Length: 110
Image (cartoon, rainbow, N blue to C red; front, side, top):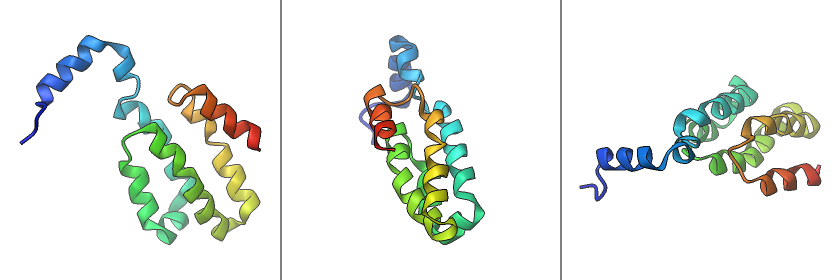
């Protein structure tokens, strides 16, 4: 049995306003779709577990940290340079979903 009923959780979210809804599963869908498109059919076939994780991760941080696994899969298919560029090009879809410091740290490393 759940401690917090869905109706109660939804009413609390409504009281808190846009801050909670900004990171809703719907706001993650463009990120999820971009990552799945970058992974492609070949990548999904090579690593079905990663595809499953990308489809069902429920927060932006989880999707962000799955990028390293994407690089590994894409590297084996297309080479490391292509993989890094493909995953790096996904950074724009995370704008507003992650702390600025995390986004800046990624830019500084490359």
